[in-house]
Each structure stands twice: as structure tokens, then as C-alpha cells.
Length: 450
Image (tube, rainbow, N blue to C red; front, side, top):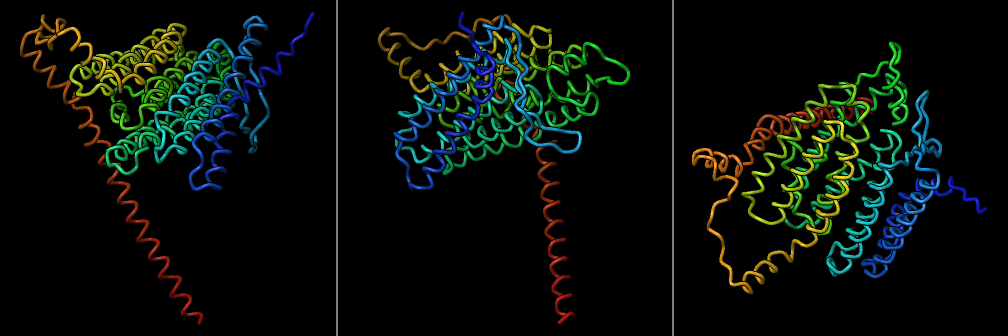
């Protein structure tokens, strides 16, 4: 009987994020040696790295079923140690991570092939492929991570590439402003994912998912987890990455980037990272009823507001962005109700559908015009049927609120963004004055010694 060493396949899957990282390194070296590296070579490197990563995931999935679909908690050592703390290279391969990682690898692979023609002769061609490989590494680290520490590393790589690809067209003011909005939102909300693991380390001395699950099952007075506080911080991080109320205004602005990156980031993968974080954190939310209630409320509010805002959207990509926000809001509700498996299936199906729709966006208008011309149809002047039951004043109020995005952006700008920028400007001035004073003191001391 043939014996298969499944451990080798699991180790290959854990190393799968390394293939895109290695591809990024080769593209960087190539770009340093050539002022404009050949597009064919860059595409070949990207395709090879992504295919190797995908094959590694397929091998791990086969090995997972050979082992009767039992979760595998795999540790490949420590990245570094400081006292009692060690940053472990820890991966968790189970029924949640493997399917999502397979879909992620496949979508990034398809994006690489699509972008070879879509971005042909674009000035940032090599930069796009390098960032896409970094994103592939980050999303796989996020999904395959066996601890919040590892997940945070992948989470930050995904956020970094997201910001850089939103501002891909650097010569235009719109994409740059949109990328700064994404950056500010990510930085503020990622504080939640930074604080939550610290609370776990202080309480149970570990942030591994299996240890958290074990600790929530057997809680004692000496190792009690601050479940509510930890869950609330994780919720803040998920809200920022998945564009939920009240910080979801950055997603329609992110459509300033290339269509290919919009598809894989905000239709397929990046926008669902917050949902995946909630699925992984289900044991903590089960111990925090307040956090689960807040999760449901935020998801419902986001879905309702996104649907109404999408009805008055002026372009197709923004309309899809609001549709994505609404569906992700429903996934938040599913997580709040404890339906983690349903949320996982919803995530995978929605990611594939939205990815396809975003790639088709440039052709949708042309197809619609051709179809209308062929059928001889005229634009409909009838009002939306689902609003007929409402009175005219209510419809006008909903229209005004929807077109103004429910004034959420104005409130955030006035009470959060402006005070933060004012404080940053004031601190910058104080730092400059202090540096000038220290420089003056040093020059005076030098003259005195002379």
C-alpha cells in the first residue's frame, strides 16, 4: 500500500505565501537591472510564482482529506523571541482556511493573466505585478495564519498593497486623495487588531486560534479572557477592512484604481478579510453577547444604507461597490448570529461573483447599449416598484439621505478627521520648534568650547 507523507504537503502549503514573495524579489532585481523590464518576463515570473502557490494549496487540500479532514495546527519555528514572547510561524489548515485560500490563489492567478493584456504598455506595469504578488503573499498569510500575530502580518501587507494600488495612477489627484482616505481608515481601525492580541497575550499568554478556542471552553479565574473587550477591538478592525458603517466611505473612492485591482481587492478578497477575521474569532464572540449584538446592528445598518446609496450611484463601479458593502454587511449579521459556516459559503460565492462583475464592468455599458439598440427598447420612466408603497415625502427624504450618503462622511470629517489632522499639524509644529531649539543649543555649546 502506498504511504503518503502528508506532513510534507502541509509544510508546502504553509510555505505557499513564500512563492509570491520570491516572485516579487525577482521582479525587483529585474527592474533594478533594466530601466524598463520586459513585460513578458514580468508576466512569466508572476505566473510561475502564482502557479506554484496554487499547486501547493491543492496538495495541502488533498492531504487534508487524506487525513479525514482533521484540522492541522502547524508550527515551523519562531521568527524571533524576546523574553517569554516568541513570534511563531504558525499556520492552521482546516475547513475554513483551505477553501478560502484556494479561491484566493485562483482569483489572483486569473488577475495576473487578465492584467497582462489590460495593462499592456502602462507605465506602472511592473509595479502593478510586484504589488499583486505582495498582495497574494499577504492574503495567504492572513487566511492560513494560525494565530492573531501571523494574521496581523498578512493583514498589514494586504492593507499596504491596497493603498498603493488605489493610488496607482499617481499623476491624477483623485486616486491620490482616495488612497490617502483608505490609508487613514486602515491605520485607525487596525489599532483594534493590534490591541486584541495584546489582551490575549496578557490573559492566556498566547494568540493562537487553537489556544483561544481551548481557553474559551475551559475558562478559569486565573486565565479568564477579556472576551468582550477583545471582541470589540476585533470588530473595529473588521469594520475598517470590510468597509462597514460608519467607516465604509472609502470603498467607493477606491474605484479610482485599475479595474483588475478593484476586482481582486474590493470585489473578491481584500474586502472580505474582515469577515474572515470574524469567522476565526467566533469563539470569542460567543463569549461576548454585547459584541455579537453590535455586530448584527452594524451589519444591518450597513446593508440598508448601502442598498439605498447604490440606487442613486452615478456610475457602474460605484454601484457595484455599494452592492459589495451590502452583502458584506449581511455576512456580518451571519457572524453575529453564530452562522460561521453560512458566512464562509457566502464569502466564497460572493467573492467569485463580484470578481467577475468587476472585470466585466468596462464592457457592461457597451453591451447594454447594443442590447437596447437591437431590441428597440426605450429607457424606463417608471419609478422603482419597491418604493411605490411609500409616500412622496418619505421617498424624497430617502433620496436626499442616500445621495448624501446619510451625512456619515460629513460627520466623520468634522469630528474625527479634522481634529486628527489638526492635532498632527500642531504636534509637527512643536517637533520642529523643539528640533530648532536643540540645534541652537548645540551650536552655542560648540562656540563656547572653541
